[in-house]
Length: 192
Image 1 (cartoon, rainbow, N blue to C red):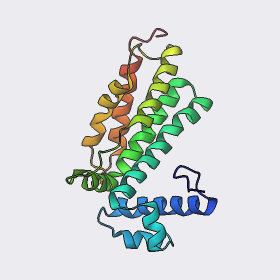
Image 2: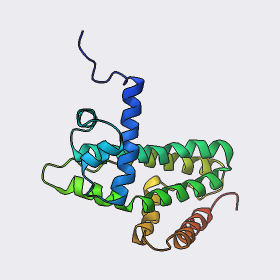
Image 3: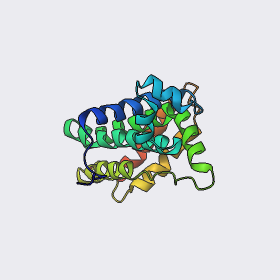
């Protein structure tokens, strides 16, 4: 009986994988050059287990990125369950900003992993884009934002975040930028 590559991981294997991801996230955020052997040791897994899960530095970095993006994306539906749509959108934008600023060190690792010849492509923002679309459509249905705004429009408007220094006092400037974006989204809303 052959081993199904897509079969769910055993519980202990899944725990190992998630522990590696958590440790790698912390270490690579601190320093993009952290050796993989250090990450394996701090995650309390052997080199064999580590490389079975992540055969290369690129594979590890891109999986961390995907994992973190899924966390941000999944928070959209959670926020919509307990907030008005426009409050959910604004809080989600805060989470995306915190993710972006906290992962500045990881951004260096992603750039390193995706810039060499034959490197994998940088992963698409699709879960985040889908989350943004979900929030925007709910806001539009509630009549609290102008109609027709796309996730691409929102991401383009939020692009100013990438100009902020993650090592500085970025929070007040990010909050001001996101408030300006929300004000712009509310202009022309049917319920205004």
